[in-house]
Length: 308
Image (cartoon, rainbow, N blue to C red; front, side, top):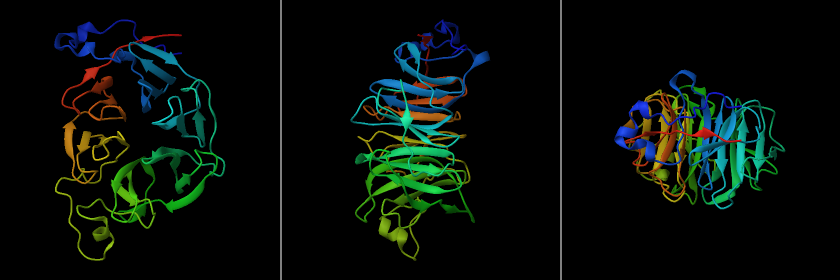
């Protein structure tokens, strides 16, 4: 049970004075007994949040406990079928729900018994799933998780293979007849076209240039080098606007992940982008679960009460 949920709106925090407590949905925790969030997603206007005390569905000012599929590393939701969720499990396996998290079934036939670090849906084909497995690589399902096949080794960065900690499919053309998959690792950001020819550095210019042996243009404002990219997110309606949650804060790109700007400096442990509004981001930050409706320029600490 969610013992640490507060039953008061934290007016003493000063948020009400600046009008932030009026933003919905609301969620907040007492500073002394905060939960830790590992994964967030939107589903049919609600926030689905995986915490160290289970899985929760947050609507307006209420949080309802959901069936717990296990230790969740990543969540994704179907953009066209409300209630369809996928949960990647840190202890191995993938689970699917078709009722908004009330119940879960296995969706990992063919996957090795390794921790699943990230799961995402193909931007232009949401019944196609991608999953990244620890110590293994990238797997794909073309039938909504019924069966899986291996498609790509882990990215090789800084002289070593790296696990992918976060993954998004970006409806931005690669120049090779496909779209991009962006991946966050402990060594930074990388990407691969969905032909799976090879992992590439994120560079400016056409993707064909990045495959050539010659010199390619570098981003003018890349993400910080050597900083782990643990969270990536976007709204499919605005594929050029990608967010990255780092220890150094919330970063945003307006050109499909090439150039980046720091939007706020507080560390981000998990994030989700509202599919109906790419400026609306919910993030787990040091002060609790918060949201921004202006891409990180200002934030609201959210408050809610537990509902059974």
